[in-house]
Image (cartoon, rainbow, N blue to C red):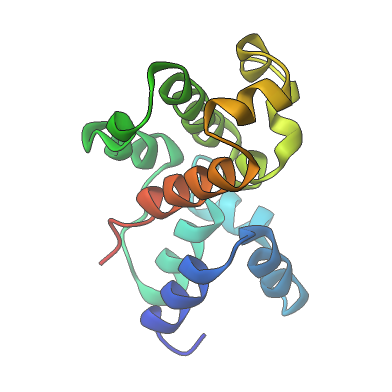
Length: 145
C-alpha cells in the first residue's frame, strides 16, 4: 500500500481482516517480529500504520475503550449489547481475528449468552449479527488519522 489512505480504504472495506493480514505476510511482513519490536499489545493494523506510515499506535485495549466511550452499543438491546461488549473484550485480549470467527460464540465468555444460534437471534438473524460485527470493527478503527 503506497499511502495510508490506500491501506485504510482496503482495511475498512475488507469483510475479513485476516485476508489482508495473510496478504501482507505473503509479501514478507512478519507480524511477530513487528510485535517484538513495537509491542505485543498492538493490533497488526496498528503495527502496519506505525511502521509503514509513522502513525502513533494504539493498543487493542485503548481501541476497545475508545469504542466504549463513544457509546457505540446504545442502538442494541441489553443482551446484544452484552454480547458486543464481550466481543470487544475478546478483541482487546486476543485481536481482530478472534471476533471475526463465528466459533467465538462457542467459547467463554460468549457461551454464557446461549448457543451461537440463540446469540445470533438476539441480533435478528445472521445477516444482522454480521452487520453488527462489521460495525464494531469499523468503530474500532475509525479513530485513525
